[in-house]
Structures are given as structure tokens and as C-alpha cells.
Image (cartoon, rainbow, N blue to C red; front, side, top):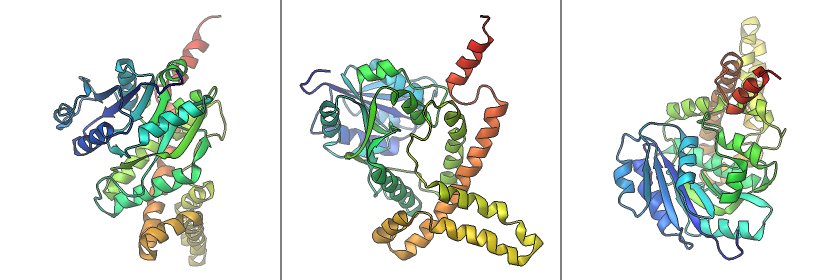
Length: 341
């Protein structure tokens, strides 16, 4: 990559986000560093997403079928012309200097292969307390982790084209946790930086049950991806392990109450342990929204943890029983082992 400012391609995978796509594209075309091209890969949307994209001078790549975010990003990368790829999810609107800051960080740190950003604590469109919960938590744990990290999240991330080509494409067998699997390959040869200088507002899920269903679905790939990682313990953690364990122990110890009502104290103690497991997060939420909201936030956070634990357990069972579930590397390894020497 040349020392002068390189050209940038913004790659936006999209599936049924006509609500936010216009705000996303408006933010891209308002950047202090204008991109060379903007590629929107529409992954067989059934809403007005393609009509919205056509309102802008972007390249619209329309997939005939839904292949998932990994396939959409790979297709966008094969279409883009820039020296740097800036991957951006279609439900995020960037701050005006996000792309410029990302490029300057890559130029200033040649050993860094990827720079990714932090979502704001306020949602792009405020649709209620569930969405506020999600944005507060997502902002907090990323901001706390800022610096050199082991995981890149490609919802808002810049990576040099040459680095992307060296590491290889996203695993198209993964519709979730694809960032974690990709980061495992990327971190072998390059540093990853998480920075508040690359920022944007995210429009997240705004209803309680769909949020839990989304968390349950996404967590199913946690164990399969972790099982093939070459690094151990190098990734980002959204939640402290002690909080996850405390949440899991609440339903696990509830049957003790059938032995003796006094033993109900055990799950209650686990619930209390969960509530105080992340004091920095509690102070952050209370400081922004007040103590009453913190109480509500903690209850929702507990439900999310249960969904994550149950989803991870389900995914672990699927990983054992279904050879086609999880990262593609598993299938490649099995095929290689089956070949005659």
C-alpha cells in the first residue's frame, strides 16, 4: 500500500434493511474521505432495499438467492476496486470521519492489518428500551476493550485488500461468528485494532423475544468456532466468564428447592452473583439511564445470558452430530484425513 492516502471501497452487505440503508448510505457519502466506490451487495432482500440503493451512485450487486453475510462480503470484495476495503453493515450510519480515521490508523501502523470500530451508546433509530439495552451493552464492552485485540468485527472495519487476499475470504458456511473465525486466521500474521475513532450508530433489534431468538441463534456457533481456533483465549469477550457461569447456575440449581425451600437460597445467591458480576457495566448504565433502568437492564441482561448459554449448548450438540455444521475447515480436515496417503 502506498504511503499517500490509498483508495477505499466501502462494501455493504444487506438483507431486508430498507429501514436503515438510506441512513447508512447517506453517512458514507458524507465522509471526510470520499471512497473510490461503494458496493452494496443485496442478499435477495424482499423489501425495498434495492430501490433505496438505486437512489445513490453506488454499485448494486443483486444476489438471486440468500447466501448469508459471508457470501455477500466476499462478493462485494470481488467487485470492489479500492486498495482498502471498508466493510460496513447496512444498519449502521458512520460518523463523518470514520473512514478517514481508519485509513490513517492503517497507514500509521503498517503491522496492523485491520481496524474496526465501536458503535455509539445511542441507537440509530430509538425504537424503545430493548434496543437501548442492546446499544448500551455493545458500546460499553467494545469501548472497554479498545486497543490491540484478538477479534475483528466486520460490521464496521477497514482492511487492506492485500491483507484480505492473503488471509482469504470469509467462510461462507458461517452465517454467524464469521468474524471470529476470520479473526483467527487474520491474527496469525497481523495485528487487529479496536478503536473509538471509527464510530457509528447502530439500529439493533428492538423487541424482547426476537432479541433472545437472535442471541440463541448466534451463540450456536460459539463452540464449533472455538473448537477449530488455532489461538486460545485471544478473542474479545462481551461478558465476564463469572457472569455467564452465575447465570447458567440459576436454572441449574432451581430444582434444589424441591428438596428444601431453604435450598432456594442457592439459585438466589447465583442470581445475586450475576447482578454484581460486572460492576463497571452497572455503573455505566446507571450513570447514563438511572438506577431504575439499571434494574430493568439487569433483568434483560440475565435473560440474554440464558439464551446465550442454551444456544451454545445446542450448538455444541449439533457440532457433534452434524458434520456439516460449523466452520468449513472441519469439512476440509475430514476430507484430508480420508484421503489415502
